[in-house]
Image (cartoon, rainbow, N blue to C red):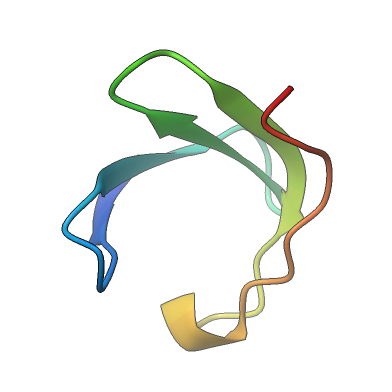
Length: 52
């Protein structure tokens, strides 16, 4: 399952389901956030990790 999330600054992100709780957030330039927890709403995502 893949979600696309458009941020207010026009950047486009992709949310890809890894399991029931953890998502991977990937920028178009391949930077990846891992360990994002899903709480049923894009507005309630907690962000973990970094873009480094």
